[in-house]
Length: 285
Image (cartoon, rainbow, N blue to C red; front, top):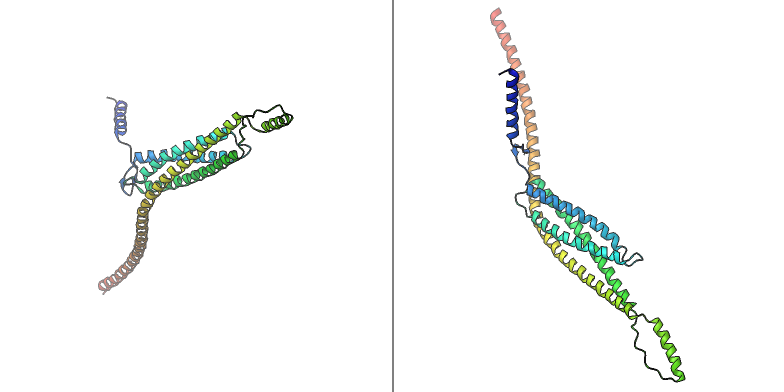
């Protein structure tokens, strides 16, 4: 076999050996580990959902600002309803994920940081959403009150009149009164609108209550984890202080060792000089 063919065969075997080796794992302080992929996947999914919820909050804030103004239309109210329903379901899903990730066992310092960051972001976003829901609730109630105060009067059936001269004048007055009264279909429309908005009010109130329960559950878990985090922080600070003290001691020991080495060199030099003088005296004497 020629030298070229032998080299090619050796390279092929080396390539196969390299491909068969498992990928290197990140190492810290002499040990190797990789973050839990399930934790990372769940954290990324919750982060993406929170990003979407923050966008929904911005859109919802803009739509709610139109309620009770000239820009208040059925389409605006429909968008408000859709955003509230979508965000409410998404917050419930994220809340369950946050509770799960907060109770994750055997977390690394990086994962612990992710736990705390996720709970803060969730709390901030949920608080803003609850405030928007309450604003929408107040505007819905004000709208219902306004509609009820301007609800047209339903016209009553006209009474039969006699053919007397006074009855002709009474008939004319009744016709004028009827022109000021709204038709029945307008009254029905206003009443249906009131019922619809009262239903929206009940839905918002129920949603606010449900999310308040979820908020309290997450807050309780975060508080429990916070106590553990305080203990970890204290331990980290103690380790840091101990490390700084050990570093100072090492530096002091290094300086002492350096000084001792210098003194030893001086003593050795003196001994060499003395020994040289003695030897010269012996040989020359």
